[in-house]
Length: 318
Image 1 (cartoon, helix red, strand yellow):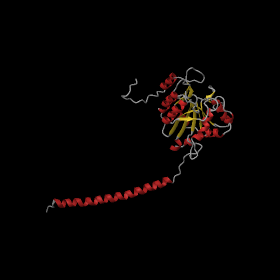
Image 2: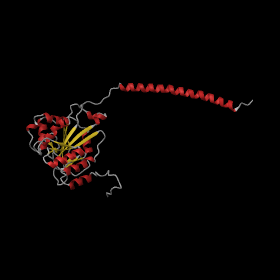
Image 3: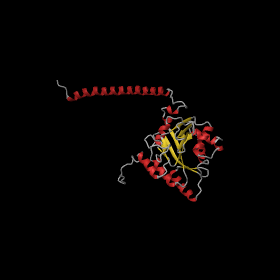
Image 4: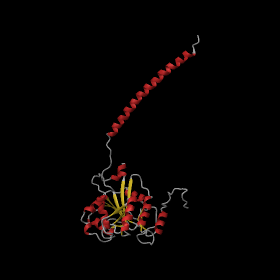
């Protein structure tokens, strides 16, 4: 006798129903096992001690926190140098730095003395917030550099902070072009305490422990800025060529046990040729003595600083 199509369908549906139930039960059991295994793994990992590196070698750690670098560059200039500041804002504002790196560029000068300065500088601060006005009379070699460095701990008060606001603080001239990414790369392997970094003077010298670093741009670790604020040594000797006097403080205070000579990645513009000049070359951190626009343009062209200019219908630059 031939079975009906309906009975045949029932024979197929019933086994399929039990098969689906079996799959669901199996998935449920595996899900429990997976969650248990995952929980076990988390517990195991939470008990593994993490080696973040000792305080003596923070740069050797692979921790993202240790890879962070905070740098303050103070460009010493004059209140009336409006156009120079606007130009330098373009120079540094268009440079990129790696992730985890903070570079703050500030323009530093002494108290304002003219009515127009009070208006124009105030507008700059409102727009850019990149100016530090020191409590001093404008000068070059009578303590301005000391006032700059010694004021930083109070300006960037770290009372409630667990770490310094900056690892390094730098003084630079407004005729120096600093390549930020190269500066950062040179600092990565260096200590973050008791560091004195720059271009060694005299020009033929390569020994950073003999004399001092050129005023084109030198850098110290944050602890040295704190020391300058508290020490009596610089207060007794404020006048004289600012870079040489700074070196005298470091030597007399037995500071800067860690020193780095950035020569010849830092140098004076090639013309006119002297013992302090160097041809422009790729391995450059800073170029000094850019006293006119022609020298700036030659330097910027060499490093191809406009290569990232995006095409647009708004302009045509051949």
